[in-house]
Amino acid sequence: MSDLLFAAEPRQRDIARELYTLARDLPLISPHGHVDPGLLAGDEPFPDPARLLIVPDHYVTRMLLSQGIPLAQLGVPSRTGAEVEQDPRVIWRLLAENWYLFRGTPSRLWLERTLSAVFGVDERLGPDTADQLYDTIAERLTEPEFRPRALFERFGIEVLATTESPLDDLSRHAKLAADGWGGPGGRVITTFRPDDVVDLEFDGWAGNVARLGEITGEDTATYSGYLAALRSRRQAFQAAGATSSDHGHPTARTVRLSPSDAAKIFERGLRGTASAADAETFRAHMLMEFARMSIEDGLVLQLHPGAVRNHNKSLYAVHGRDVGGDIPRATDYVHDLAPLLDAYGNDPRLRVVLYTLDEDVFSRELAPLAGGYAALYLGAPWWFLDSPDGLRRYRDAVTETAGFYNTAGFADDTRAFCSIPVRHEVARRADAAYLARLVAEGRLPLDEAAETIADLAYHLPKKVFRL
Image (cartoon, rainbow, N blue to C red):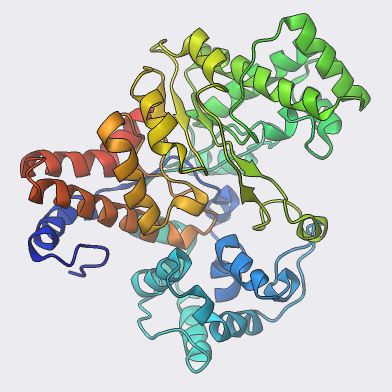
């Protein structure tokens, strides 16, 4: 067995091997991610290696962009949704020629492990091997064993949560449910992500709110009708298997407004006269509303704050959102979450999973908060922090204060379907290495470490996300 990510010290390495074998083959729970459900609903062959492994992976494309390679050359669609005409083999060669840029990065680790574990390709990627590897993978993709559903089974995924807007008609999930793959208890479930109808600064917000009314039959020209429409869509999402909502706000701020004050901001938003302060206040108020709704309907509330969205404005102008143009920012949780925690933090019916892009707050704010409120759990290291070293720093920072059982297990948070098993492997190896150190230092008995690694890998995410 590979000793990837295990300590060089022999005793710790031996313990890590033993612990990892206990978690290695456990089913994968993917409670938060961005895989397109149409991939599995249609179960069509993947088009080519480049559009499978490069084009949708903004970890990869942003590194190439940083070295002056435009995303158009990498086949990333424009903001209009039109695909850029680009030979996929040329895209693959571009990556191979610039593979040295990824030395020491998790992107290199994930992609190399994907090539090896999923496609059986162990040759090192580079200019001299690019065409050979491309041809091998392209041939694999024509085989039935490499269709999306077949890979899903091979990966050992028990539950995969995708992420959809309230404006999504959930037809892809309906197809999965009809095929026995979706709905309550299904293998693929949805997640309620209402940012595009909550954030007044979201492009087309007023039109999105009108569309929400059309879908639900509620009068979303009024604030009360708007809330009723959101409740209606939450019910529809739960019928499609959702067990959680997800909120990607710029900050973690929460505030309690009176219904009349909230309605005034809402109406300014519809008129197009809302200020940036209005938008922040409305987002903060709606987090309180969503916490209250979660208490009523049981959806776990995931909060992903701390990203300055579309920081690279020229990139956004051409290619739109979610293509690698976002940047982390410092985030306050202690003060910003106080109104929500004062109201609901000790209510056992509420479950809030907190993520951060600001790892300075792991030990200073998040671990003490999760260790002090029944409603709070710490989400896995996210986005820029889900690297092997990021995972280690997370455990070092939070365990002494929050323990293991105020955390929510691992979430792969990926659009790159074939990287899912690799990301879980890396997380399980990192946890095995961390627990092995505790055992070797006499801080945790081996039998308890064995129980803990199974909980972190499998049992905790099932419990926390109510799967």
